[in-house]
Length: 350
Image (cartoon, rainbow, N blue to C red; front, top):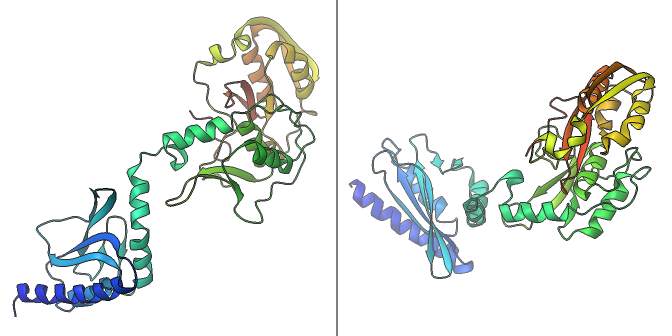
């Protein structure tokens, strides 16, 4: 019996098993071609034909590989419907190699799930995606909703209160992924009134070991999730890098003036300089607490000198083992973010 005869028999087997699946459930819009490498065992194609025939696919074809083929997925638009042509490679190691997965005969459940989710996953991957895995339109929607100003004092409020306020202000669903992601905890000590909802919420969650993550998974709606903080995760930041040079975003910080600081704590010095700064100073409480830095007790001193305010502030923060960065909220309102930069406190991004 030659290879052609074997392939004819296999096709008949696949049609038989495929027909059994289709009789009880509508077939998936997937046409699978399995290209078998040279050296595949003589019994492997029949095993795979029987298995794939139960996957409820539109059609299955097992054939010889045509040279050095690669696994791929092609999308075909037929009228108002979409079909998917999937080329898989049956390797001599008896594995079915797909574009982003590989399976053995024993992986039946995982393989069935893969094919069931393939149409949604393929449609998801077909759209251009950027930050947080969102499309441009999705990101703009979230950004716009989180650009609403906070018109009340944040001092003394908890992350839970900010979270509940946000739920009422935006239409994108907000979900807590697990019980530990409950935004209660310590009252906020920084004044964030006038800043955007996104920056305020991100700050309140951060100091309580939580983070805000926008996401839209395949086949699911766009949502905002509250999750335990993960330094390696992609989460909504406390402010953004200004879209213009710092001198343009906050020109008052770069005006030359006579400055002398003596006998002041960092907190007192910032209060004295606030009229000249004209922008909020927000401390990264998460990092300050970890490093036991208290701005109300750290003494700072600057000799009298004519310099610009940004330079003077940088030297004061340095004396407290801190660094500052000019950021803007979702409303493009500038503020100083004060922290110790590292993997747990990255610098602002676009």
